[in-house]
Length: 103
Image (cartoon, one colour):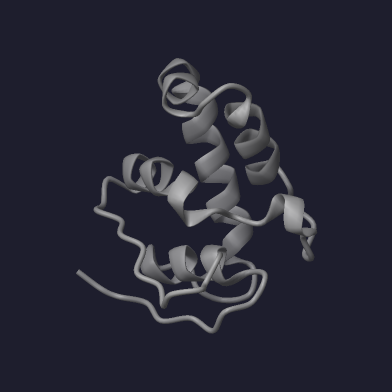
């Protein structure tokens, strides 16, 4: 099992996951988003039960955003995404962060 330490900034969540699954590089996040979006849509009923109220729609919209710079509304929440990532890549996924880190 690998661990990834990325610098905190607006893309750190996606960068950590792309590095962990072996995509790396500057464009790996696009492939990652496509695969996570497909996982979310393919298992919509399950994820609607996981997320409260309309969180499913918000997460779906954030994953389905492909511009190179994302406004804060489209930032990845690792706490929300951990189940989607684990199911999509069939890998354990844990989030370890210093206190005060919000990404």
